[in-house]
Image (cartoon, rainbow, N blue to C red):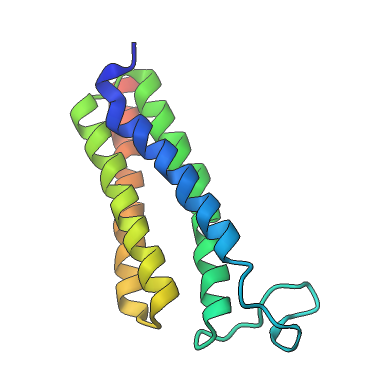
Length: 133
């Protein structure tokens, strides 16, 4: 029934894996002296533990919109080619963003991958709205 959307469905599964990996990785390297009272790392982009936490939290913050538009696009029967392409490109951008976020302090690259991911979410939303109406 959903065979035409295999790439988009795989992207949803890969997203779950990526967020889960980031969740586990975000807890490594924390020290008591670099934590806030809430337990989160203190804001310091030079600290890899802080960057891992931010990469995870950013992924969590983008989960709802990505999952919502991808599932909606599949359910409304939007053009499978575009749904699959946008979902796959979102995953590629977010993997790249996670790598850049964790391994470097390169804000422009992080912002570029973030913006590209948001563009893929917006493109999916347009597909949903066009197919729904």
